[in-house]
Length: 383
Image (tube, rainbow, N blue to C red; front, top):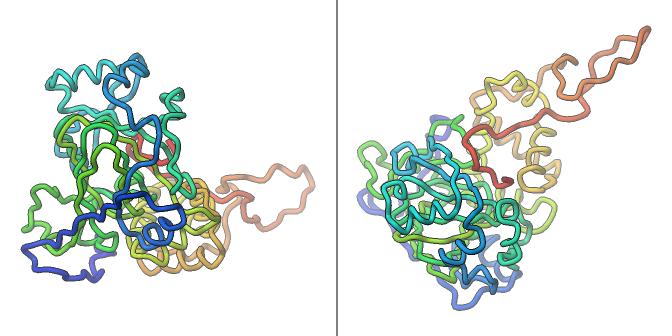
């Protein structure tokens, strides 16, 4: 990804050794105001006790009793290298009981399958009251999502486009978090790769420092998330998660309250370069589509619509101007709009005004062209 190859890397330590810092652990959960000021706005990972809720008592047996007969989609081929690098996986249907049988009997299938990102409100609506949103969530972006991981599961190193709470109710997860600004040194998959997340090409367990030398200088946080814990992972911070044992967890995608504070945090905080890389990746996903020229010609309105759909945020004109200007500096394609836009290419074509109407220069379509995220199944915060 040459467009980001020149980003400066902060050399915290020698190339052969990473700087490792434990994630701070709080004895008590902060108030919403304190969390907003000290951790959310500062983009500081932190461990805290989860809020009181019935979900803290979830076990494999309780899930069997409440949702065992429910048919779910599970990820398969999760032990292959393509899954580790976030490039591909398949989907299979089975009941929750069938999935849990495989886990508890330690069958070969259990090591290559994952019950992941199940939207609790949609898949298990009767469980939703047991998993209320934590009070520290200012604006919900997506979830809560249920995950039941097999023993030894390795989830690829990636970054999500939302602030994130990870809660563990049974088992444990080890988590490594890398600063958002180290985009180039995490060697993301090529621009235009599918999906909503951005995946690193580095196997964090066994990094090939000959192939990925700059990864050696990236500092990181580490922690183990235990039952009753809630981990905050800031938006666009790289993270890799492993489940040493069968683990029940929930995650929630969110942002701060307000019309456009999430966007402002991204522009002012350490996530800015990762945020821009993510936007360019989505633009590249759409480069070969018929509407791409229209997207570029109406980029301000397209991005405004896109951010409303993704985060329920209404960006200001100044924020949009800044984002488009920053994209123009980094993109390999021109963001200069054409002088005219054929009416036949609009997403929202005008109705026929009837015979005898005076021909006019085509007006800008009423609705901006859509900018869809293309790619892998079940990777959207809005599932």
